[in-house]
Length: 165
DNA sequence: CGTCTTTGACCTGCGC
DNA sequence: GCGCAGGTCAAAGACG
Ligand SMILES: [Zn+2]
Image 1: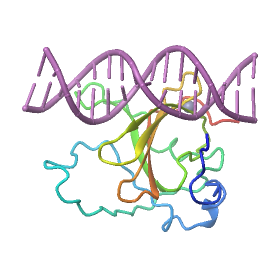
Image 2: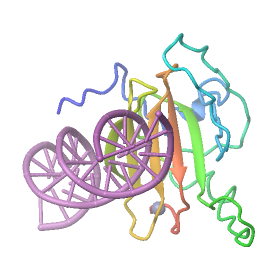
Image 3: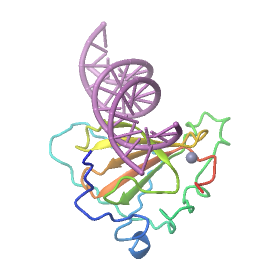
Image 4: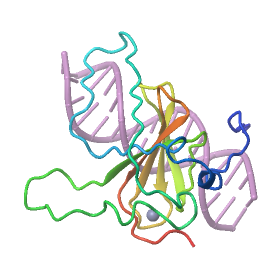
């Protein structure tokens, strides 16, 4: 109750983006399944400098439109490396987006199934899953620690069905 | 009426 | 063995 939208008018993410500069407000930071992680040995010592890495220029046009999806067609089922003891083929795709709302419509229906607090950020992490039966796709949404205006959306899995009608 | 949201509890893996 | 962290499920309620 009293959800109270953020201190900001309902800025429909699916109608303003076309008018904004993808380089200024729509920073796409692709975070593939990297092995190395932040070697954070000591914690809470002195805040580390924010890693403001906003770069990369991927073709992202009809995002939040309705049917266009940058996911399908790019990196997907690459399970041809089953012979070698390679890492799992779990498709993990992180997306950093500048938005005040976490519910970015990407053309799919998601059902929230959990909320957790991350220690690294004073913000909670939301867990979503595709409502479509048979779709093992999961989505994780979390706010940035240094930039609460940024939202990190992590997609896991591949949709096995076209976008919603 | 059906769908989705919300919160807590619960499970597992790991570290020490 | 316990605690912590992260992740998941389930019941109830809200809501259209
Ligand atoms: Zn799906």
